[in-house]
Image (cartoon, rainbow, N blue to C red; front, side, top):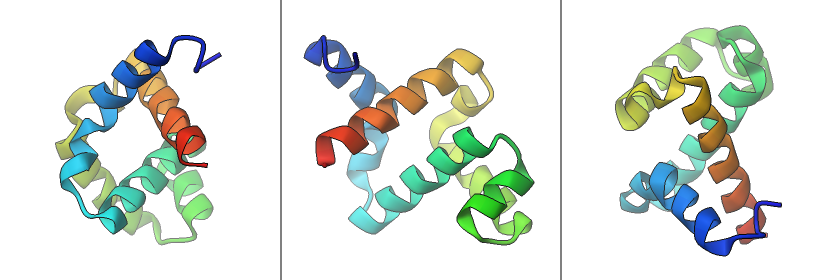
Length: 94
């Protein structure tokens, strides 16, 4: 369904993940992994379990992500779009 409209998929990906273009490959992968875990896990403890890191590390990383994505992590619609953008990136890189 995501690839029915390649223009829309590209726009959504660029809108949310365009900021990763200025990062190194390792930084971009870290951000994507953290975002996916956060969006799937829901809270600090589930995210920490998914990533197998300490909950305080999750909180520290979330502060960084909030600087990158501003209010997008708190808005439900933005979180949904961000999740779709991440799925698009994963599917196109495979």
